Length: 410
Image 1 (cartoon, one colour):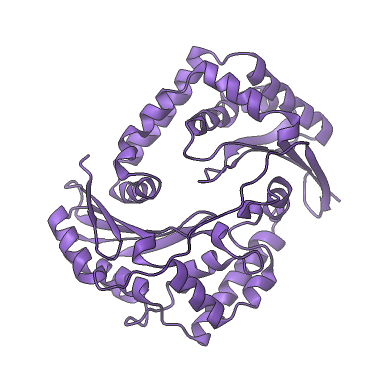
Image 2: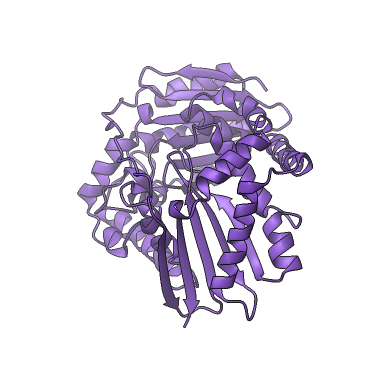
């Protein structure tokens, strides 16, 4: 894969890779803003903008219709670190994609009507996902338990429903012009389009958008946790559930790859440790999972599970702790480590056969260093050693580094 780069005078970074096996073109616009950039009393704004960006821009009253007429599709997602928009379109209609994305980077069509519609959509989503769904409020409980200083302490959807309900048009405009700027974005273009054409279209449609004064990110660092934090809640849910989380390193650390491998050793596939030992053999859990948050700043390795009938949350927690102690005391076998590494490699290889996945990945890696790091990602997993895994496990899985939530049915 050949990766090309061009930086516009206004600071927009274009990264490109051509794929002649498709007749489509993908544009991925990644904005360097997420829930961590929100004011603690005005949360949920990054997610609200994910919706507002489809409500019409400066010169285009509706985003979806022209793209659909051109045979294109689009979507977006937000997390605590970034906001990501992408579209695919037939190669002969590629310019329509550049036109659409540039206009909403220039400015949205701010109106009370648009805000009211999207506010309603987001508030309904908050109610459905967090208030009216079993276990939907776990993120709102675990995050502030784990983070007491860093803004990862609230979920992407927002801390409280009232923050979105009370958002004013002035608040929304201020957030947009602070963060949705060419000098705070990466544009990745992939598919059947030459680098020369991608540069020409990027300059034509994005070149005149003014650079903006983006605030320097200066987030409070989460202090080291000194003692275990525990909480019990009762809710109207069908089954008890156990949630555990341990603080881990940030994404830039080489230990990040060790944490990712540890989470897969614990729970990726039927032969993983938690599934094999605690679900299939001992029948302590009906289901159990382990995963890392994947965040840019220091994140969490989380374990969640529903105990089998007749098993208490205390017994379930003790069974998980036994597996974590095993990782601290015994080296993972060469075979087990190699199997997990092979899975990462095959996922990476097959994922990057798709031009849209490549666009998303190029933008992400460019934001966090340089797009070319995509090509050496497998190597970073390959370089993780058994000694590194045991060191990371001993550092992370200390009781005082963890949070535990007992989620009981009432």
